[in-house]
Image 1 (cartoon, rainbow, N blue to C red):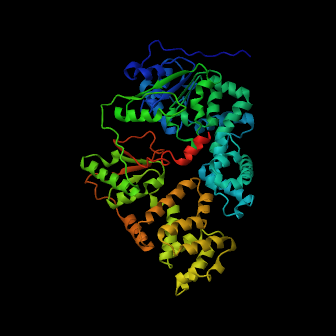
Image 2 (cartoon, rainbow, N blue to C red):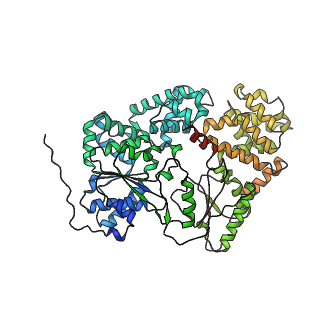
Image 3 (tube, one colour):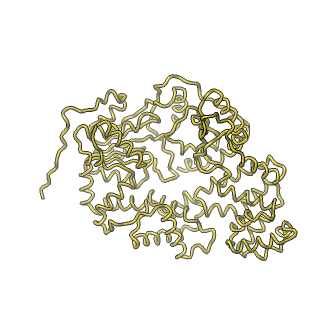
Length: 593
C-alpha cells in the first residue's frame, strides 16, 4: 500500500523573538536543526527554559503539536512547560504527548497493547496495592514462616530495580541488597508468581508500564513503525536520571525520525541508588555518533565565588563532559570552610550563625541546612530545639519521630519503667514469634509482679517467650543493666539489626541513625537522665525566635538529594568529612567499578 505523509508547513514569520528571551548558548540549542542532540545543562543554566522554548520553536515553525513527544520525570513539570509554551505561541498544546514515562506508557499500552494480548482495561496498581499483592504471594509461598524474610517494601524495591535496570534478581540483591542474599532464590520465585498473578488479574504496576511498552516496540514492528513515524520529535528532560529501560524506550521511539533531543547534566547524576544509569548520558555520543552537543554553562543562580568552588570540585570527575560554569550575578562572599571538633560543636556553630542571620533580617525560609544522610542532622535538630529555632525536615520525619528511633527509645523506657505498657507492647512485638496477644499476656505477668524489673531480668519470664525469640530476648534482657549508650548498641546486636534488615530498604541509613543516637547517649550518666533530656526537648515548641507576622516560617533541613533543583539565599552543608561525603561505601563501589 502506498503511504502519504503530510509534511509540516513552516510559518513564514515565526512569532517568537527568541534572541530577546535566550542567551547565545540556549539559542543555539533551541534553534538547532533536525537530528540527534545532547544538551549538557549545568546547574542553574536554564535547562527548563531550553526544553520549553524548543517545543515552542518547533510548533512555531509548523510542526503539529501531535507530532511532538516530551518525556519528563513529573507530570507537573510537563504541565508547567506546556503551559509556558502556550503563553509563548498563544495557542494550545493539548495534543503534545507530554508527561512522565509512566504516563505516556499507560497511554500507549491502552491504545496499542492489544497487539500483544494486553487487555486495554487493565488496572494500575499503586505502591500500596503492589505491596499487598506481593505480601499475598509471600503467604502463598509460605515464605513468612521465616520472620526475617524481607517485608513488602523491600521486595518491591528489589523487583522494581531489577526491572528498570534489566538485571536478574540475584545480581540486584548481590549488588544492592546483600543483607538479604540468603533469600535470593525465594525472591526470584516470588517475582515469578507476582508477575503471573498480575497478568491473571489484568493488573499492571508502574514497572510494567515501561517493560511492556518496550516489549511492544520490539515484538510488534508495525506498532514501533507507526509510533516512531507519528512522533517526529522526541524530547527528554533530566536525561541523567533515566534507567536502562527508559533509555532503550527513547531510542526505539526515535528510531524512525532520528529527531531526538535529550537534556541533562552528567554532574547531577545522583540517583543511581534508584536505578538511574549514568552510562545513558555519558555514552550518548557513542550510541549516536555525530550527535550535536550543546553546553549551557551560564549560571543564573549562584555567585562566581560559589561556582569557582563547584568547578574545582567537578574537575576531578574522571568521566564527564568538561564544562566551566560562570555566573551572571554580582560577586558575593567566599564560601566558608569551618573546621569543627565534633557533631555537637557543629550543631552549636550553625545554630548560633542562624540566630545571627535572623538578627540581620534574613527570612527563616531563606536558610537551609543540607546533609547526605538523615542521621547527620540529629545533633542539629536537638540544638535547634534547645534554642527554639523553628525548622522543617524535608528529608522525612523529625529524628525522634522515626519508627526505628521510637523502637529504641521504647526499649530504654521499658527498662526505666517496667510498668510502661505502651513501650513493652511495642518491643515485645518486635521479638520473633510474638504477636499482639502474646505481648499483652507477657506484659500482664510483668504488671502483676511486685518486683517487675527483677521478673524481667530473671529466667522466670523466659518460659513465656517463643523458642525462636529466646536468643534475642536474652540479649535484650542483658542490655537492661547497661549504660544508655551501651544499651543502645547491645539492643542493635540483640536481634534489632535483623529486624531493620528485613523491614527497611534503607536499612544502613537507619542503622546509622541508631549508632548516632548511641553516640549522643554517651553525654549522659544514666538512662534516666538521657530519657528526661529527650522528653523535654521533644516537647518544646520551637517558636520563640519567630517575630510577629512571621508565623509558619522555618529553616529547612534536607538531604542533598531532596534539595536538587531548589535554592536558598543562605546554605549550610554539614558532615563534609572523609567517608562522610561521599560515604565510604559509595567510594568502595566506585573503586570496584
